[in-house]
Length: 267
Image 1 (cartoon, one colour):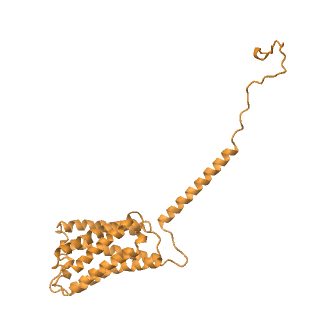
Image 2 (image 1 turned 60 degrees about the vertical axis):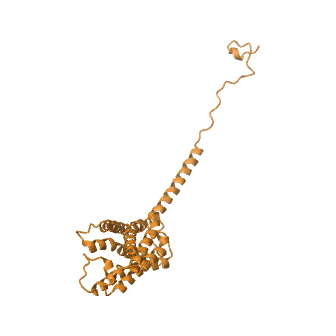
Image 3 (image 1 turned 30 degrees about the vertical axis):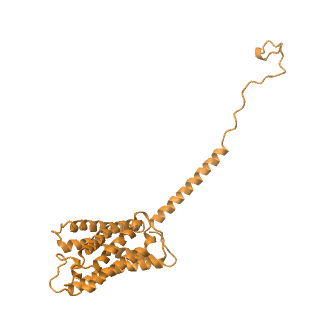
């Protein structure tokens, strides 16, 4: 990941760590739900519907989640500007807008806006995790791989959920497999960035990409030095000009010399 001020990276990491608040509020809302609620059969939005005793808390959690996702994406944007990671803030911003719409337009209200918000969150979140994986991989291959797997899982579950293929995990279970990877992935990234934002005193270990770039620069410098040395040596051992072997006319030759060549005899 690119260089960014430690304070900014620290606050962005905290914002993404706090996205775990969603799981705490969801558990509270489920505990206060009147009647039977199943995480396998019932979708998350039911906890924010009018029949839910904790609907205001749940919908407020959706809005807070949007703010946390967006705040982290904005604060960490310089960190994400590497390759495919450049589109991560855009995709995560779409996911933030989606969960905001879910909270502002709960189930039982404007169903069209609620549905648009759900799709934005699920699709934007899955793609955002994959883009985020490319930005994180140079710093931590394990984190990048984990984010990529979470993103692929989220996209696969989203496809099943939107097409109604929910027989195995249930409608609520399939939606959760599609929705949960984003806060989990952001929290993992936040934890990693929080650690990087607090380096040991006087040390700042370079990333793998930085190490590769430095090694490449050193190899190029050595190659230039080697080429210069070879060129200098070639100039030192360059052979002298070959002697002129053309015949030289001698004006002192005797014209009457019978052994002289015809072309060298004088009239």
